[in-house]
Amino acid sequence: MSVHLNWFLPTGGDGRTLVDRHAYTDGGIKRDRITPVSGVRAPDIEYLAQIAKAAEQLGFEAVLTPTGTWCEDAWLTTVALAQHTERLKFLVAFRPGVISPVLAAQMAATYQRITRGRLLLNVVTGGDSTEQKRFGDHLDHDRRYERTAEFLSVVRGAWSGKPYDFDGQHYQVEGGLTALPPDPLPEIFFGGSSPAAGPVAAEHADVYLTWGEPPAQVKQKIDWIRSLAEERGRTVRFGIRLHTISRDSAREAWATADRLLDDLGPETVAAAQQALGKSESVGQQRMLALHGGSRDKLEISPNLWAGVGLVRGGAGTALVGSHADVADRIEEYHALGIEHFVFSGYPHLEEAYWFGEGVRPELASRGLLPELAATGAPVQFAGGR
Image (tube, rainbow, N blue to C red; front, top):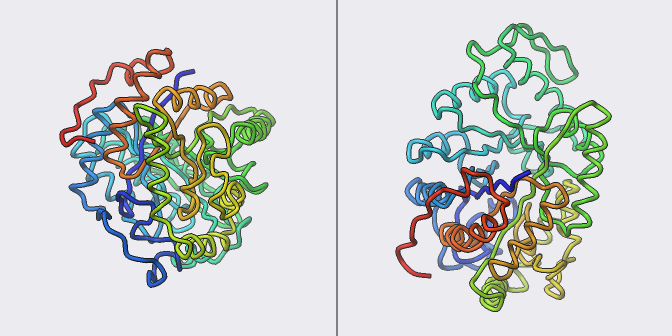
C-alpha cells in the first residue's frame, strides 16, 4: 500500500496567518469581532491556478476543494482550474442535501468527460445546522446522514447505465440515469465521527477520511469503520486530513508554528472557540477536545500540533518538524492503514513547495510513494523562502 499525497485549494482565502477572511465568527457573515490582519490573499482564479500548478508539478495527486457559503463553489472553480493543469485530480467537496442526486450524478459524468477522468468526490453531510439552513436544509444531524445514504444509493444507481428507481424517506426517483455514465467512476471520500456516520461510510465510501487526531485515536476509527464495512462485505480504504509545517530543521518548523500562534489574540481565539463550540459535528467536538481552547500543551502527540484548531474549523492539527520528522509521522499513520493524506499549510503556495521539495523526497527514499508521484519532476520556487 503506497502513500497518496494530496494538497488543498484555499477557495475561502489564504495568507500568512491562520486568521483569514472567513474568520469563523457568525459563520463568516459578520467580521466585526475579528481584528483585521495583513497578508491575506483573495481566492481569485490566478492565485488558485498557481497553487494547482505547483501541486501538480510537485507530485501531488489531487487537491481538495472545500464547500460552504464561506468559499467559492467547488464544482465551478475546479473545472476552471482543470484547464490550467494536465494530470492533477480534483477532490470536489459537496453537500448532498442541497442538490438532486441524479443531477449530481450527471454533473460528475460531465466533469469526468471534460477533465478526462480527474474527478474525485468528497461527500460533506454537514455538522453545522446554521450553515445548513443557509442552503435551506432544516434536517437534524442524524437525519442528514440518513439522507446522505439514500443520496449515494441514487447516485450509484444513476451511474449504472440503465434507468434506476428508488423509493426512500428523502428521495423518490423514477427512471433516474445518466445517459453516459462517468468513466472512470469517481471515488467517493466520506468522513464522519458520529454513530450515525459510521454505517454510511461502511456502506458507501471508497475512502473514509478522518481529521488528524493522535495515532491511537485514528486507529480506533479505522478499526470501527473497517469492522462495519466487513459486516457488509465491503472494503474501505482510509485517508487523513492534516496541515503541515515542514522545514530543513525542527527548530525552524516550530518557530514558524510559534509565529502563527503569535497572530492569535485572546479575543480572536475566544470568538472562534465560541462559534466552533456550537457545531453539531462530533468530529469538530473531538478536534476542540484536543486543545480545550488553551495555548498550553498544543503538541498533543509527537510532531502533532493543535494550534490551527484554535481558530479554524474542521481539520485543526498540523504535522510540525523537520522533513524527516514529518515523514516519520506520515509513516506512522501509514502503518495504521492510512493511504491518502490530504495536506495544507499557510500560505498554501509556499507550504506546497516546503513539503514537495522536503518531505516528498524523504517518503520516496523510503519506498512509500507510488511510481507516478515518485517520478514527478518538481519545479523550483522562484522567490525565496
